[in-house]
Length: 205
Image 1: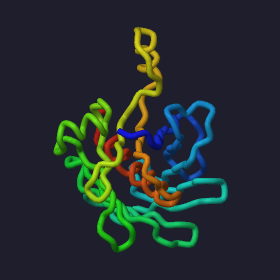
Image 2: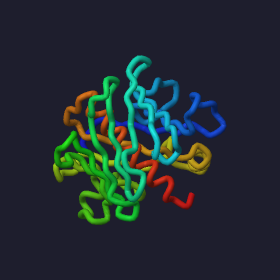
Image 3: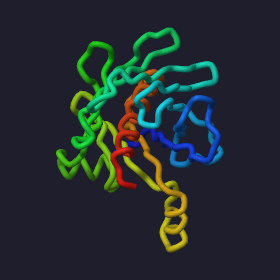
Image 4: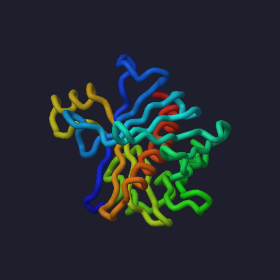
């Protein structure tokens, strides 16, 4: 996959204090590590399973809202800005099929997150870079990135392996090098979060 942007979703541990009235938090960091970095976005979830309202913070004065419009079935969400303008709509296609679609208001889906099992071996190898747990991001039918669960540190050897086991894993969104505007990137992060939360709640871990 071509060099591009990498966004790491880090779930705030349950023992850490959260903003009032929120039950779960994800912070998004640019790059491979979240250490000593300020998040590029923070998601404060009113309900752990994204069935309520989620506060999306890109900066201290920039707050958007991700609202669940349909709480049954695969779900449907809407991302709106501070004045209520709709930036994006997200729809699920079912956890078992592992598919989600992102579109602008009233338009056909532009982006999809899909299970790679239905794609060719070359696409899986290129987009997921050897990871076994993940989704392929497609734009207008063409693969442009991936959403995979990755360890927080790299390296070989027993000690490195133990460190990875202790540190755990995060979901990482990788985008290729085509330009993406700020609002569209935030929509892609919200889109990815919907898939992440759905997969975490369906996982036996």
